[in-house]
Amino acid sequence: MSLLIIPKLICAAIIALPGYLPVPNQERTVLAEIKENQQDITLRAATKSVQGMYSGITVTWNNQTELFPWENISEPAYYPEVLTANIDGEGQDEVIIILTTGKGTGARGSAIHVLQEDWTEIPIGDPIAKAQNSLSSMYKEHQATVEYTMNIAGKEYAYSYPVEDAEMWFEEASIGRILRYRVQDNKLIAEIPVQVSPGTYTGTIEVEFRAYNGKLIPSEVSYIEDL
Image 1 (cartoon, helix red, strand yellow):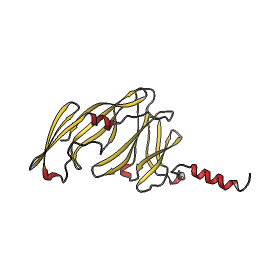
Image 2 (cartoon, one colour):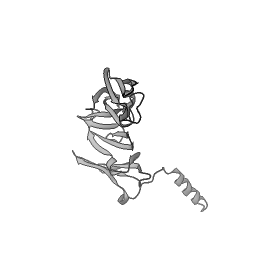
Image 3 (cartoon, one colour):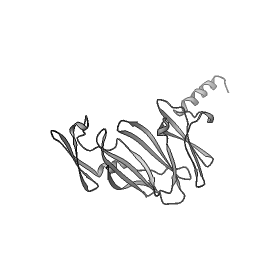
Image 4 (cartoon, helix red, strand yellow):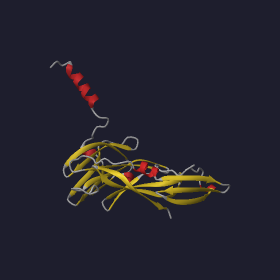
């Protein structure tokens, strides 16, 4: 091979590399791990954090490791959650990984990945779209108060607040700025708070998933009022 060709091959290889490069093992940060029920699972950052985010996460599951192009906030308080459960009701437990992808005043972004034993992911539907289809609201502003009338999953709710309680009130009840997930009794549930201002919450819409045709789809919708 001509020596002139070698630099070109090296350049081509660099261009073909992904946007994140795994760092040496000793430099990787452990983000989450569990060792229970004959499962040994560890999540590590594949790169050093950039602007408060890890881009690229490795999953080691019973001595096998895969790299995924996932992102998570680099602050320890927002590290991923990893757990196992049989949420599709078939075969073995899945590995459920819940990531925090964004945060702010009255805002939090989450992503979830469900891995099967062969490392394939179970597709997951959009719970926010399901919740939005179950919510309608009306807003009235008076001299001293603001009022919201909501219909959520077929039930009506009414709320009234002093105008001075918030600098800004939304013209309708808002969801989607905050999304969290949890697993309870082998069921995946999305938690979506209902906001009427950046810091005022009326309650939380919960969307329960069910397995259908190899997917997890948003199914039952319920609402829990804040006390």
